[in-house]
Image 1 (cartoon, rainbow over the protein chains, first blue to last red):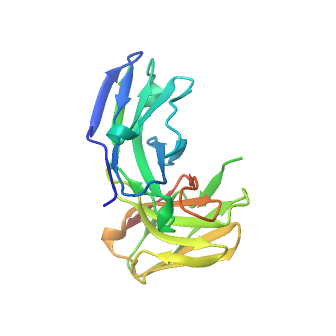
Image 2 (cartoon, each protein chain N blue to C red):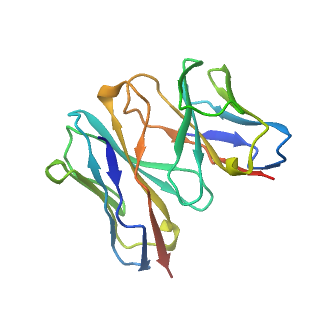
Length: 116
Length: 114
């Protein structure tokens, strides 16, 4: 069965703190893709990163970094020195390449509140 | 330019009304999607168009009718909706082909059905 679990429903941090959002996935496929999206209060889902199952290199983009570990089926997202503008709901998603479907399997999302 | 536009931003309609949501992209993408998102929930896929043909219908009620008039435009026609259809409707686009392509989302239309 395919599944994405974001166990943290809501996280509150004070500005400049680091915060890690967890994502655990389940899939039987060997080829799959993982995504992170940000959804601010305005509603638009903003694409942050796409990672395929064969690339376990961690990635850093400015204050954002991602840790992909196939051994634990996790794809965690860390924001360093958080800012108020980071306040949003963050979704992790899985797409299985072998199923010939365009469907994303979304996690339930983590609401991040960054307090000034 | 990774931009998907949607109009209107907000829509209030009665249960007997007919209205349409519009989505446009100019990224040359040939796959376009409609999602429905209820509050505090992830988006749920409704329809997928690939090369202007409907390829996925996730058992959506017939009161929702999608249309893809050309490769840049996607419409969602609404008729005889129910209050429980009130939600954020998101459009997305991607390159077509196998799964795993990045979907780029528009800002959504917030729909309220009275």
